[in-house]
Amino acid sequence: MDTTDAAYRDLVESQQDLIVQFNLEGRLLFVNKAYCDTVGKTREDLAGSVFMPVTEERYSDVIATQMTKLFRPPHACIVEQWMQTKKGLRCISWSAKSVFGADKAVVSIVATGRDITPLKNDQKSLRKRDEELMVLLESGSQMYYTHTLDHTLIFVSPRFRDLLGCHPGEGKRTWTDYLTDHPMNASGLERTIRAITSGKREPPYRLEMATRDGRKIWVEVNEVPVVKNGRTMVIAGSVTDVTDLMAVEEGRAEAEFLIKDVSGEQTVSEYRARVSGRKVKGPLGYFRSILSKSSDEENVGDVSAVSQENLK
Image (tube, rainbow, N blue to C red; front, top):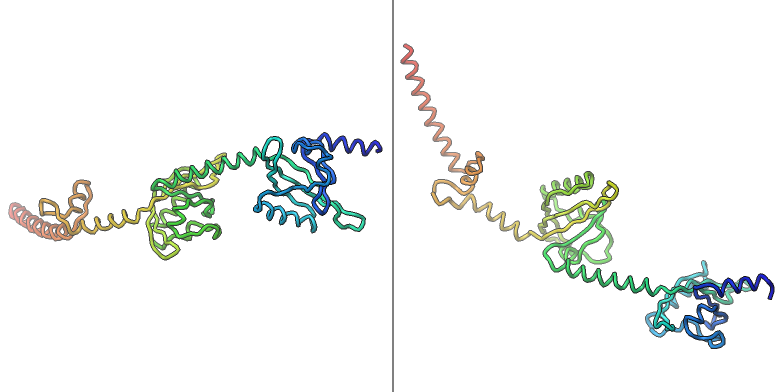
């Protein structure tokens, strides 16, 4: 062995990453010290053994599909393998590359592996926290969403998605796609644009939206711009279904023209206008004002006549 080969072997053996070489039958031709230490076996024990044995069928299909890339450009792939080690079951991420012979055919595979079990555990914990948070969010009356500055939806909570009749994986859409042509919607769009521009929260507003099956619903929107370095990045908000509430409020408004005040002299709307200082008259108020005007004009005429008489 010359000096170059010795230096190369020392470099390979000093690596913390696992390094292996296996033939096209999947049998090991070379393993470095880190691999031996990880699996708790000697080179003699591992020589000729099958590399990457898969104990679960669901992993075997994924690995086999990825490794077909080794036989076509770019002749490289990355696969993850859960394997039994001295530390128990660990997840190893393998980066594999084809080795070519004189006829430019693949003769073997070289792979380097790294233990990513801590990362996998962190991802699992994060998914669990996300699931718990989603359960908490979905337990209330509010539904949540985020959208970009051009109104493209990024996140839509499951209940809001169900309310609109959306389906997972159907592609990102703008929230304005769900708006009807109701005049109130223009005001809501203006508030969103102001929030994006100013970076400040706008008061709640209501929108009429159309679901995928053609139903019309009303939602009350509370949203806040997410600002970073003085610039609005996204809009995050919550919505509450107020369809039933809007129906009640509309019915109450209509009833104000029919229900009379306890005095029997004015409608509820007139009463509320009077106590709030507004000069709003209902039908009775209109006729009453005409009659009052006529009486006033007659009185003014009498006063003028008396004044003229006195001047003579």
